[in-house]
Length: 278
Ligand SMILES: Cc1cc2nc3c(=O)[nH]c(=O)nc-3n(C[C@H](O)[C@H](O)[C@H](O)COP(=O)(O)OP(=O)(O)OC[C@H]3O[C@@H](n4cnc5c(N)ncnc54)[C@H](O)[C@@H]3O)c2cc1C
Image (cartoon, rainbow, N blue to C red; front, top):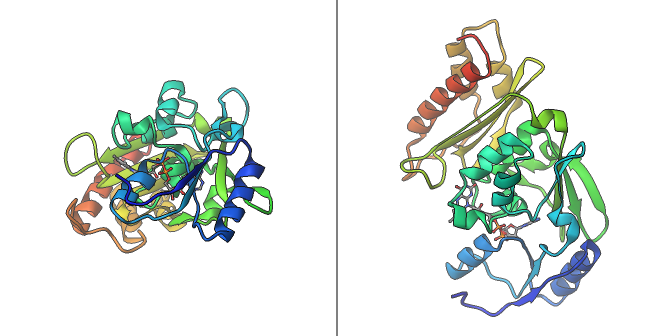
């Protein structure tokens, strides 16, 4: 049971949602945008989240768009992860989504909720970072669009009262050769020890990670080493790993050294599958 009372709002438009946010904030209610609600409810029960009002964005039509026929593809932030599995508009994103939580949870967990959640794996970010997706953000002042790579630094940098409305992915990018692998400590459900999502475009490999650091990342330095064809693959991978941001996670799921070992194995698999000569 959630140990506090909160008001629940279900606005029908972006303007209504942002206006509500301001109004509730002025009333001191510390409002939260609410999408699938899985994290808000779980962390509330544990005492890590407290709010007097939630603003459910699922009734806002723009947040539920799934335009798989146009260019760019448009994916609403309130789409449940299982909707991606059923429609598969962007195969790499589908593969990432399919390995998050279990199917029952994925019926609730949304694209935007995974990206903006406090639970730091945010695996959806890996596919969106390598695809260089655009992100549509609404706030009290305006609606803006930006490249996710410019806004996602460990987590999405949102302004006061802003929420994610949509993601846009170039159709050509969505069909590029790709690689995804998630390794857990054990079993087929759970948080990642290491997740890698990679795409190859114009002979360059782009790669993003979750599970290695307490945030997902894509790094220009890491990619420069991986794409340095003057060196043997083993050296490229070791140099890439040395360039990983810090800290490396070291917890009950796995030690830092083990995570780096697994990352090296997966990078070798990724480069091989993406046609790099080993
Ligand atoms: C059983 C379980 C297993 C999990 N396993 C994994 C896993 O393997 N890998 C992984 O990466 N994650 C995993 N998670 C984390 C999960 O993906 C996140 O908790 C995610 O936030 C839940 O999405 P939601 O739509 O339910 O978010 P909500 O609970 O609705 O919201 C979570 C947070 O995001 C904010 N938010 C939601 N939508 C938006 C938006 N559109 N714009 C701005 N802010 C927004 C909310 O204000 C809130 O702070 C797991 C969670 C559960 C419950």
